[in-house]
Image 1 (cartoon, rainbow, N blue to C red):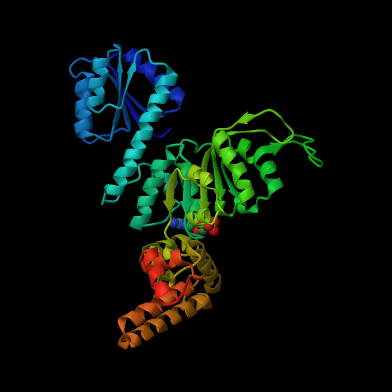
Image 2 (spheres, rainbow, N blue to C red; image 1 turned 120 degrees about the vertical axis):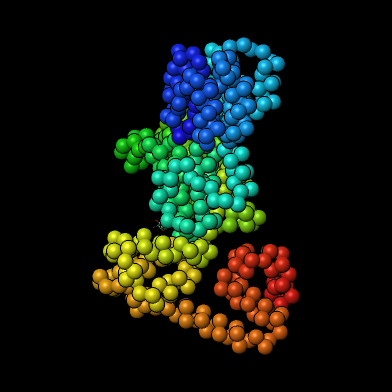
Length: 457
Ligand SMILES: Nc1ncnc2c1ncn2[C@@H]1O[C@H](COP(=O)(O)OP(=O)(O)OP(=O)(O)O)[C@@H](O)[C@H]1O
């Protein structure tokens, strides 16, 4: 596991005992420290850990004094006190001073694992709350898993930090966003940043599942389970054991299969087709959709219990048109295979202008395919306007004309201009009220009121 832990105890033998137990539980980043004074100095110099396991009785600086110093200099380090004396007064004092838990020696591995799990879960929740309050941009602790996601958008960088915080825990994560915004890429990054990174990541397209396929695909089957089952087959659940299951397009899962999926999520147990024995699996679930699940629930097309089960953490990816600062970076990333992107000449200014102004209904996937086609047409030369698809050039020309008309219509009363604009966007979104409200930056109720005023239901 990726959390950083420091254990402080002046008794070298006990330090090593705890070190071994932590390795057994799966923690890899553990520091064993005999000197509480040395650790306090380092923490005061800015060093931080996710968790400190602190012995109470130590010479020079005892556990209680170290706890106080940690809470004033590195408050985000959670502390668990470890003591030889089981005394309620001492325990209460430690908790009052900011320790999260209190363990009595000798500590059983299961108790240690449980206390650490609870403490790190609380830390994750506090870090998530803190993220909402902060104005500065949070840094990723482990950048490598998120490297494939190219972005400099502040919105996106905050989402990546949130994703990193969820990655360390077991909570199911729901990723929403329009098609092509990078939901699968983010799901892969969460898996890679999680303690499960060495185990399988299995993407499943839920829209392709039918009633009979669901069980065969998820549970697998034994030899002879049904006509034609000439050999046994391992299903997604068994294959992915200890890894992450990516439930893509979950909004497209037929209602009759949602109950079956819910049972899988709740029980973590299943029986192969053709077998009566139950098998247990240890899985992390990540789901994604470009549907509005809340709307689907209101229309009774998506089960509420399943929704709350999959939405432990919720990450919503903004469309590319809301992070246009990423367009140039993405162009560089997608073209670096074919061009020397360190020189300015790989794409002509007019072509870049068009790419920067386009609205990308297909998001990053669309940008990628536009560039792939442009590379083919340019045959090694810099990409020019004429290498870009006609629909993109036309869309931008139309948009410029509309802007000119909008200026011409400045003699219209303001209410009339507003009405025209709202109705235009409403039409462009296929009469989708939520999207229209989001694009216009107004509340859904305000939009409904205005549409009703224009005689649109
Ligand atoms: N920030 C990014 N940086 C680099 N490549 C990206 C980024 N976001 C998306 N991509 C690329 O864009 C393409 C679409 O991404 P992805 O499949 O993850 O989107 P999606 O939201 O899951 O789409 P859908 O809803 O259609 O399944 C992929 O080739 C992916 O690698």
